Image (cartoon, rainbow, N blue to C red):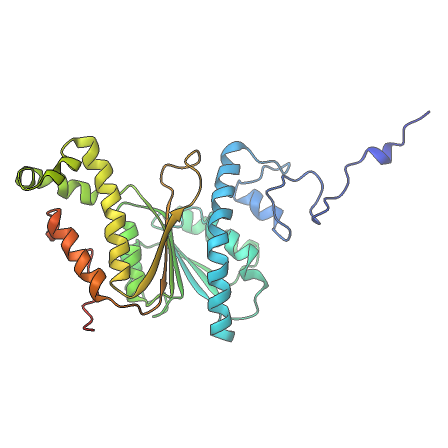
Length: 299
């Protein structure tokens, strides 16, 4: 009995995707875009590194999507403005646009901020190729973007995914000055606080038994990283934000997986401002007061 060759052909995906695609690809996504981002290979496959990247971006998207919907419901035709700091190859920006922004019929816009001009140029070319008019890319540092005339005076959502060292703090400063409604931050490589702890270690060691926490160099580094994010959360609360801290992905994917989500609620500022100053003083970090500043709002 001859076998029917047509019956052996792969069936179409029940999710409405072309047959043979990895299950991670979502309905409505541009396959060609994922290939241009080198997430999918030319034959529609995912390697292990790309699978990790895609899983991380999707996980982040599930936190960002409700924020986008909330802002859009409140803003009407003005749409949603989002700035992605330290955009790199703009995986996050393009997937956000592909999954959410491209179906909108309003003035919504994503701005990618990246210092490397060649990555900015490549992203600009991709945005044109895929007809994503609501995307712009600027060759700026995070600090420079705060005063750039190329960005609106107010931004709805600020993201910074693995923006290294003080770039996360600059992104927070940007968001505070732009009166952002939401911030989604994944800090990375925090070294500045650890360097100040190290510099002042000799003066601090005899003051309290707590200084044992950062007496050894490896503990200084790890404690400095932890304290940096604690100070960031207190700073955000001292400006009236509600702050939630969770994991982005499991430890097997990234050692820098702390996710800070801040939403402006006009909460009382006095207590977190006092706590912020107390932590700085207790740890001998008073010189960092200009970086981790409070709103100084009387209540």
